[in-house]
Amino acid sequence: MKPEPPADRPSDWPAVPYKGFSAYGPLDRRLFAGREEDITRFTRLVTDVGSRIVLLQGETGCGKSSFLRAGLIPHLEAKSRGFEFQKGDPGSSKTVFIRSTSDPLERLAEKVFEFVSRPYEMDTVAGTVALDLHDIVLDNQTKEAFTVRVKNDPQVLVDTLTALSAELPSTLVLIVDQAEEVLTLARREARQARQAFFDFLARFALVELPLKLIVTLRTEFFGRFLAYIRRSQGKPGELHDPLRDRFRDYLLDTLSDEALVKVIKHPTLRKPERDAAHDRYHFEFEPGLPERIVKDIGIRLDRVGLVGGALPVLQVIC
Image: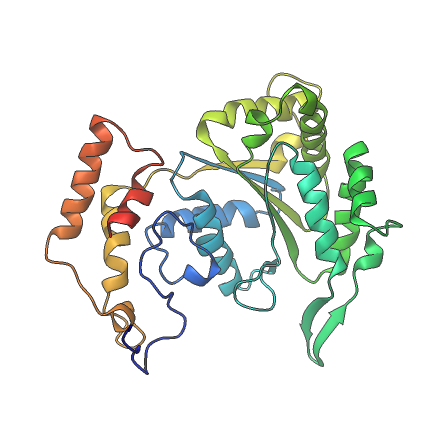
């Protein structure tokens, strides 16, 4: 039998101190470490009034999804910057967060329809009010009909989001994760879907309302992705005004050795004095062991590489 947990254990620490190959989520925000400067810099890009689309690039395994789910989103919520993210239980999310696939425009249309089909709860001085957003999806009564219209004309989704943002008290943030899939999975028969998605990006970038789109992709596809954005503008060279001022990009670099050591030690910290990680997990490392783990992983990386990068391997070892 597993021992009973201490009665005074902090309730918002995750059950286990390391994630293995799983990504961090909103419930893991207290375990998330090593990206404090990245969170601050990326927050500046997202909250910039002029930015509309922010491209987050990084190597495989650097933790892009975890960075957003457990780092950026909780940070923006805590700072009360007026961005629309979480709702209801701690594990749910107001963020329209989709995996790209070969047809990200279709996935976005589906998620937006689902979002407006549920009662939207917002806090007011008179208490919690449920707002019915369904009529914002124009005259479409089914998700299938709405999705077909969006695929045929990306402007339909732009208009829907424009109407939606006018009803919400906060900035709505959409996230397209693993966007390289629109390039790697889009075979000949899916070229029209790819073209429609980049057409949507060009149109979305020009919207003058509180809407944001974060797109994550692997660094090796960043150049191709930008080329398709330029092509959607009808100009194969660099982005031109007004689109140029609406796009931002950020490189989420691999963690330094010092940051990796910080990730390892984070679940063992004894400060603050109350509600510390050590109070939850009750273990510590032999002096010098975290540094040795990081050094050995680095040697392995230099010699033969590691599929998925250092961070997932470090999590599994710990």
